[in-house]
Length: 471
Image 1 (spheres, one colour):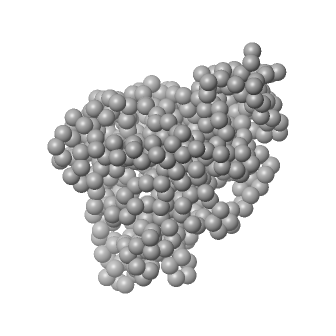
Image 2 (cartoon, one colour):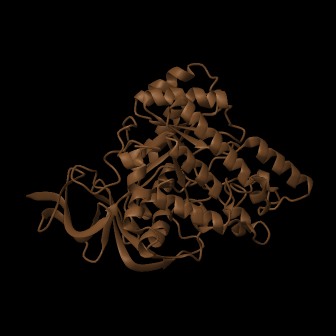
Image 3 (tube, one colour):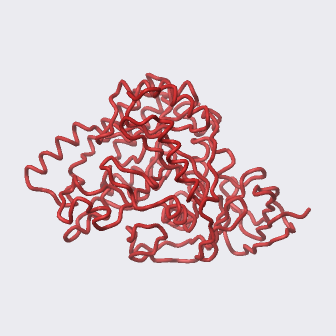
């Protein structure tokens, strides 16, 4: 049988193990796994590891922040960067402005992505104002149309009150959607920030103390209880503390429909990264902040035990200049410095290095956290696995290649790399989206606008090992 494309002789990652095989691709989908396959085009993959394309379900792209600042990346630059790092599907945010109808917000971001996205994409409906006209109607209609996740905040100037979150949970649960939560207690943060400013502590390093771990712990516990009360599933975003993991584990043990993610900057960095001369530490400012080595150990243990299911990038790109981090001035105090850092491109190499090359969880853990679980939990059945019928989103890795990140070698529009000086072993040498190369040997081959919007299935069809709490 002839195929459009054959990936020949690679070590193919299926079922968490490697087996030498050819992959036959027809019509953008995997048609067969076997040996001796022939195709109109052949890519030789001898000595390489072939994995599914990464699925990054937490990215801020071409988005206005709560501070009123547009982040640095367009869909064109962000998805270029993603493809260069081995990610083929992203879920970013359709962020509602105060007073804006949800349908208008989603239409706005859909148009932005259609212009520029070079890889496949979906949106979280990010809610900041539940009082707008037609809110419930719009939310139900958008969920039915295939937008199967909602984002809410418990802090910032876009936070929702518990009553609104509970109402959203009930709508989402009934309609087959997942509610994602930035969980930090706003009152604890406001108190800590006021005390620091009163003491004249305004440097980037003081940002860590301004968001105490108790803020995360309390809000996670409260959101888990709201999920139980509504009988509706939640995803706790960017868990950073050992106690946060423990709250999630306890909730899942009670049978609560709770899932959770963490990010590379919490797994590999501590708050010490903020303590740099001058304003340099602002490059690593994010919320929640990086924590301690003890928290890192707890996060890794949480991933191994299944309390945390996903590693996302939380890509939040701002340039290190007056257009980004310092839009409020070069001497701005930490509350006026834009929060976030780039992560789309390095997420997969960082995790491959730690989990596969370093053996931290092995290949199965890498695939589960960065490909399979994100696809399953967010309703993307054609993504995240190498199997007949799945989209031919494939990444070819050279497991022996070591690369040290430089000062500005990412392919986004941020202008710096927060992983400068970090060496990773295992490097993506080719990325294919639905059988079409979008990167080969460091050359970007993608086409702006060629990425497809992903209509997502109702949640509730996931494997038993991904269902919250008890099976």
